[in-house]
Length: 129
Image (cartoon, rainbow, N blue to C red; front, top):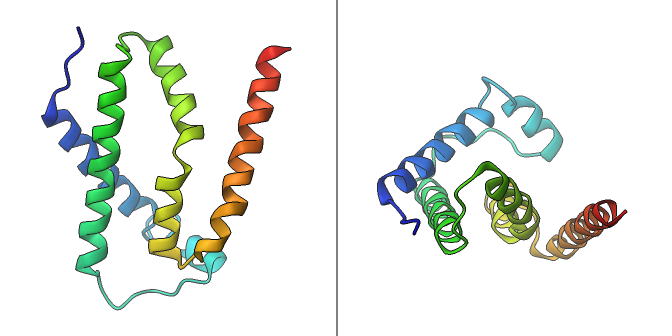
């Protein structure tokens, strides 16, 4: 039986936070992100958003860990299969980040969810051929 270990979950949440911080920093794609999204530079870090982002990462790491345990994922094929389905299945978590960080209005969620569903349909059709 696969058991969930909590220290790797905490490490994964912190690693995701650090990776996304670097990804959206001027070191990598921060300038392009601000140009394309119309978001300007902030005066400084917002503690509430930082805590919210860490919380989102912890929730995601825990949920992924639970799926691994409940589905008894023990090899790379199972992990790949789970990863593909979760990529399709977690748009709400990703979209909440867009609402938090990019001021995306809530009504645009429907359009993005429709795109996710269409992507899922295309993937399913390609596999059935």
